[in-house]
Length: 356
Ligand SMILES: Cc1cc2nc3c(=O)[nH]c(=O)nc-3n(C[C@H](O)[C@H](O)[C@H](O)COP(=O)(O)O)c2cc1C
Image (cartoon, rainbow, N blue to C red):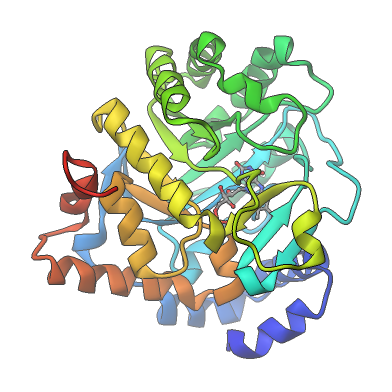
């Protein structure tokens, strides 16, 4: 089916295509029943229990696709085990001027500089409250407003979390988007602990994870992770988009400013997961994200130390059948390796001497 829809979508501007899909997801309820029947994979070996919640499978929707919680009840019908909405900023804001989203088709990649376009925390809270019970865990990814200086960022994270804590199964503080000037400086080990601690205090018991950039050097990553744990972080999301541009096929889009996602990010994001897992000795869960298109890609992240994975760019290129293919493929890979379930695979390639 997506083989037919993709050319129709790819003829359009990328952000326009995104808008069309989001509108239809909200409307096509009848089709969604069929999708659920076709795309859901139920198997106890895929279940992961984290943060006091049950994840029916490890494949989640990454932040940025449903920024404003407009289609939360549709994603489980496509087979997702959980959804991360956002980034949500405390006050509504427009984001960067368009165009700000670019496909790099030859590279199976995207460059974006959306810049946290957000309906704001209150609107998102209302939408999530209106949903009532949810079929999968819903994480809420939060960021600071563009016009808030880093010195006052703590207040923004507190405000967003305070507004959304009744509707979040976990929070992610996003300090790694390359599209809000200065944001990545919040990863600095000297200040990140206090930021996390403030977020944890505002979250009232809801776990707070922190999303990190794939561009941190190994030592800086380890220091940031240690400081975040000190501040009470319940886990990590690794990784956000990269500012690197290595190995891309020549095309005008490669010169666009923004964060690169998709296939060219895969190995770097996996390495970030592995380094985090090693640096923290697997003490807290890692949500692995970056360049996942296949079951083998997801399995690579899990064996490097991820307890759950997320996808964004893969879904754009592969379509919704991808989630089912990943889940079914993971079952095959577990059987191949003689592992009883998914949790037995977490971090196997991060132990001494394994992996790169
Ligand atoms: C268009 C676009 C918008 C994104 N917006 C956000 C965002 O608002 N917050 C966030 O934490 N990550 C955001 N991301 C990053 C993704 O969540 C993910 O970390 C990254 O794209 C790598 O995964 P992928 O290769 O599967 O796309 C965005 C990615 C894309 C492509």
